[in-house]
Length: 391
Image (cartoon, rainbow, N blue to C red; front, side, top):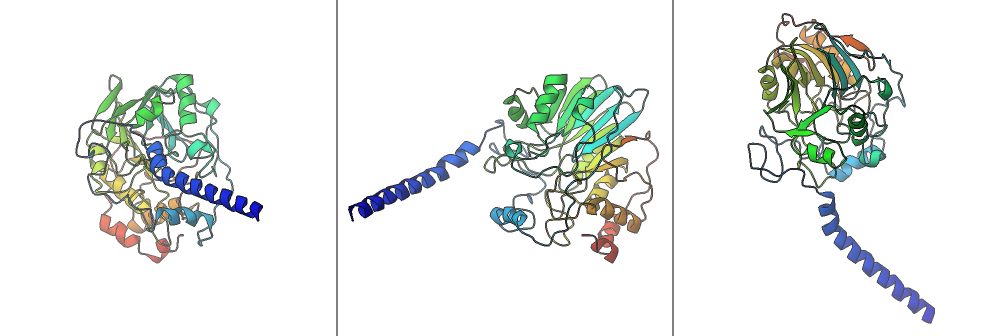
């Protein structure tokens, strides 16, 4: 009996301290996981504590609705989503040290990472060579496609742009290797530079509409887009998200980063800095349930065509698909849906065409733009049986 009372007593003490620890965790842990990445005056997209989308906030709820817990649990059960391959084989063209003479060469490394070589410069967008995109490089989606260029085969990098602080776009191990090896100019939006500096990586954090000069005639302009940022749930929107325009003598480079459609005006703003020779636009991670064609955070192929249209219909490289599984749609659905919409809408210029990971692509010089594609026609095409059948 005495032993029973002792066990009961210690069990009660343990339960009491467990309850106390749980109560303390609800107070301490969120503050610990929160971070102040930026402090500055209020603006049209910063309220003094957190950034926001000035064209309307539709990124706060999980894609597809419901709670965040249910959103995460969906990935632990079979919800009827199309299967993905366990791994895919990619090309691995070895890039030259430099490209000069007015040429421009782009190699899609995977996800949002693209090596662009032009005017003697080597530029990388949202570089990630890690196998896992998530905290500690262990928790999160794992690569389906290996990088299209082996890291050690990369030429010396002059410029890196980092669009926001999600793990599949701001990859500390990769950025640290690049910084230690090449000391490139790293340009990002406000607050993300704090994250990079904490890892010993120098970076310039710049607000929307501002620019950094790499050399005369080559500026990096931080441009608005429509997204959100977080590393730890509670630090949501403590750092800004952006797209970029890099001004180049032979025509500008545009990188959309990770974005929803919003009011689309950010695409017009990007085009206002001069003709775009190459636009790097996302088309994947847009579906979180049957039939969905886009979310507040991610554009699908339909919205991507509308963005491309507003930019003057330049040569465009579709990205943000086929590397990490982040959403519901099938592996090949984004490029197939893009091609189906173009065929339906009568867009046959070939300027916005899917590319293979790791295969180098010579970008044509600026030329006359093809005819515009009407938004209403795209909306009508999204409802056709051929498009709707793509899962």
